[in-house]
Image (cartoon, rainbow, N blue to C red; front, side, top):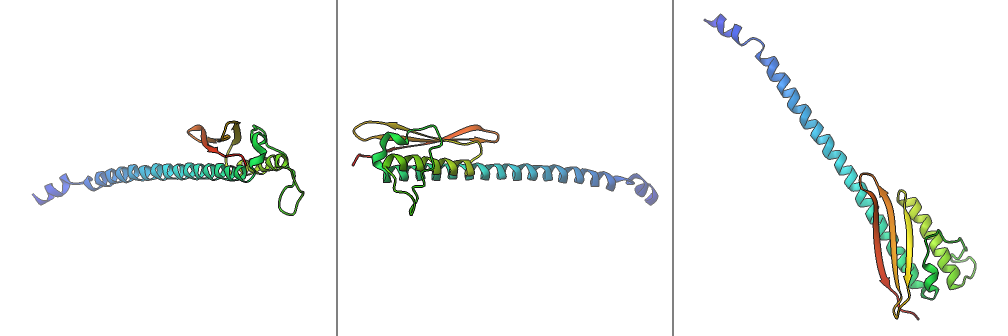
Length: 153
C-alpha cells in the first residue's frame, strides 16, 4: 500500500513549480507595466511644471516691461538684442524682442517639440494670453495657457 501512494504522487511537484513560475511571471510583467506608467507620469508632470514656470517667466517679463505692449504679441522667436545687464541700452520694444528670444530659447531647451505664443489684447487693462504647446508621447499636443492683465503705466 505504501508503494502505491508513492507511485500515484509522482510528478506532482513539477506541476506546482510550473504553476508557481507562471504566477510569478505574470506578477513581474504587472510590476514592469506599473513601473513604465510611473515613469511616463513623472515625465508628463515634469513637462507640465516646466510649462507653468516658463509661462510665469514670460508673465514676469511682461510686467517688468509694460511699455512694450503689443510688441510681445508674436508667434516668432524674437531677436537677440543683447539687452542683458551690462549689455546695450534698449528701448521697451527692443527689450520685448529680446525677452521673446530668450524665452523661446528656454522653451526649445526644456520642452519637446514646443512652441510659445503671446497674444496681446488692447483694452482699459491690456490682457496677454501666454500659450505654450508641446508634444507629449501618448497624448499628442498639450497646451498650457496663462492669461494676465497688466495695467498701463
